[in-house]
Length: 310
Image 1: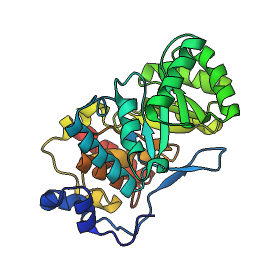
Image 2: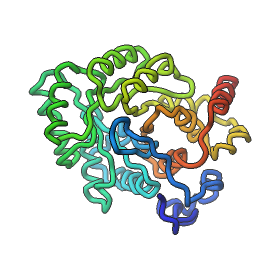
Image 3: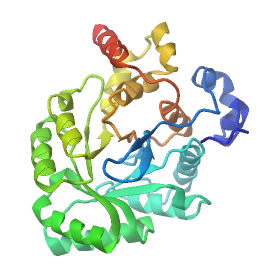
């Protein structure tokens, strides 16, 4: 639960954005700092995760830039303050793993996070070597979640990940992809191998996963990480300059980002969403989607129809 001593001024101060109080006022106006962030259980395991996390594709690929690292440190601080935990990375994402490792290691809350990364190569030995490097870059002795990135050589890597889980090197293992065309294969792997997690694309205007993928994860007790919740910015471009409907306030929605994220969270089979950002005030905005009332079935369809009508 958020520290009950926090108030609107504290969050602005912590974010280094006190001078932007007027700009952030709509985001904070209906926020109750005594609320708890929504948690969803990892099926079949006695652990729950906050429903909003952080993706690092492009946003954390900043190399040695101190200015960028300072800003990303603030992003992680905001995430921790608002009780987010899941950080998702990959060796595919340039220097992102190393930046995550460096910045979290320097923090006072490095063990508060849930660290997830991926294996993205072919061959057993190559996969083991790449994953070992990921441990070093992210400065972890145990990885919370290791995923097979875009199903690359998944039949080989599954065996390694099962062994590593048994040995305690990783807590969970999973599979990922980011296109509608991949959903059928993801379902096949879930049915055959029963991974702990599956990561895939899903948004208010990209609902292909509702055809059968969500039914499969429900049947096989698979946790879900959602990527591309904003469709790489397409949703923001479509709503630029347009007002949020007044009825969205019923769901504690104060921005288009929260609108899109709360639609996704209204699907109870979503465990966690991992939007990427390199900006502290966007991290605050994203995290707030995990608080307050969530849309029911009637509300989510109202949201969908409104976006379709724009």
